[in-house]
Length: 385
Image (cartoon, rainbow, N blue to C red; front, side, top):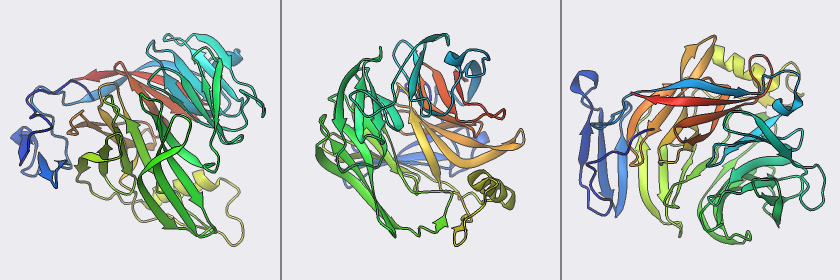
């Protein structure tokens, strides 16, 4: 998550086996990073343990810096149902409240600036806001599943344009490139099958190409706590990095959807204990339990990855299901990769806090519900050593 690392051969050079070794006193013989060329594609193989190259930081700690949402007596500082967070280059914070149908804006000191958004079906109005992203040019784009459209807002809340999503009514994640094109995880649901396509669209949402696909059988009467999905982020050079959450493997593709690099990490499956299974069941089903004829199935092991974030230096923060028991809960580990795809460190973080943005060495989290039962926006200063 920090520091540009020197001494790495240029991407175009054929790399047969560049190996970076951790301090022998702190690692095993298997703890090395190997970079290879395979069928013309650069592949970075990472071990199970971090291997920070010389000159790189070996640890990352997060220092609490700002919390929004626990102020009492002022509705401008409280949320009903947080859905998304974005941060602009001036460090203003934009928080999407799905229930209130509002985007609340705070300056870098956490002071409320304004809010915008109106429930409805007309121009610029919002039905069911699912996700919000910021374009490289600095505009906010809201995906309104209720009205089947994208709404483009300037940062002052002015509606600039709307683009219907047409038959693509189920969009899970999306990211914009610098040309206004967007990549989206599009879903198609049938009674016993779910199909997903990671597609690239033009600025007016015309399909240009399909990057990859997957499909899985489903039983509508069986509820599971995990679902397969694509996670994706845009890199500074406009390439897209994506992964399927069933594999610990990232693929970087160019604007034509052609793979240019893979990043792979060796990992060990994490068993779901009976205690965690009981907690998951309670959190997912609550006191209502299951309806007659339905079944709740928890697998024996966690998937390898939940999601990942990327910062303004192309470092990746991968939320895994490996965890540490802390404060009466299990805190997941985040694996940190540098811009070259090398696994350099890891840290654990509260499970309730989802990382939405990492900019200017600050990490922004969304808490849908704290231990006190309230939604929060939290910011941390990142300290590297």
